[in-house]
Image 1 (spheres, rainbow, N blue to C red):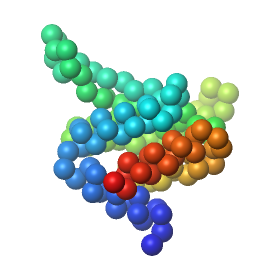
Image 2: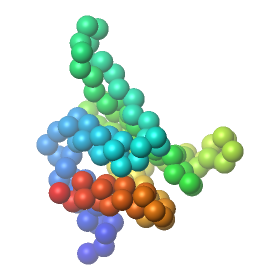
Image 3: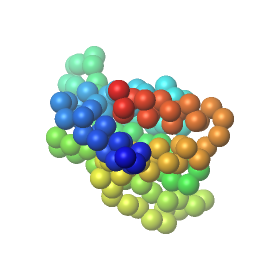
Image 4: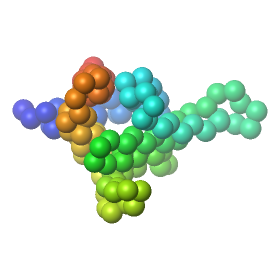
Length: 126
């Protein structure tokens, strides 16, 4: 089977139970593996609450900006092509396609970022 199919199946398994827990774990995994290049937006659970939850995240790679946002009970995945601060193209993607595209982008990066790609792959496959 192809790696793309494996990632799609892994996404389905991971997210099936609890999308909020999946998103929290994905954000933590990407933050740890991609320090300084992942922006995670959190929202307090209530006015006086000390806890918060992930509302969205953004990752900038050499070729794209990847955005993942909470939308109702699900997630909205976007990939944007940006050149010198101008967005040339924005694509709404299925979450599986988004994860595959992000993994492909990370695979093209050398050095320490390969560890991030592997961490994302390991997270999805566990």
